[in-house]
Length: 91
Image 1 (cartoon, rainbow, N blue to C red):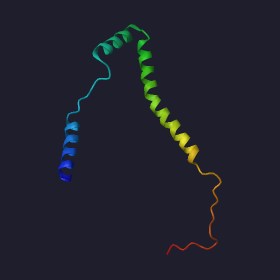
Image 2: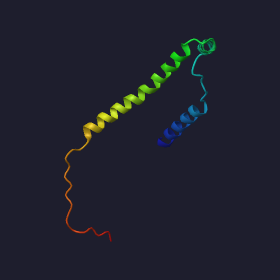
Image 3: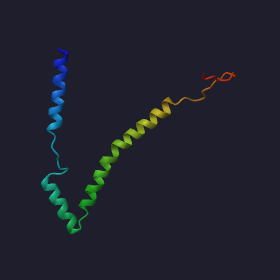
Image 4: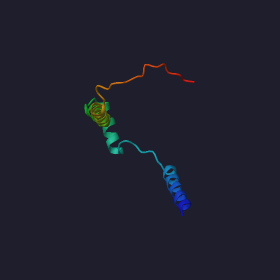
């Protein structure tokens, strides 16, 4: 039973990975509008690019803040390291 479950899991993942299709980032109408506005000199393209950069930066900012909070919370302070006065023999 365990072998069958493993086989089905591998089969499902294989089907999922084999059926991947590339997708465009925008619908056809949005892409055409942005291209037309870019050629005419409108600032819509700049706003779209700024929005994409904002959405790209948000997860990195959230992970960075969480990492900083974790570092500050779990960092050890005033740790005394007591070493013996004897020489260390590695053999």
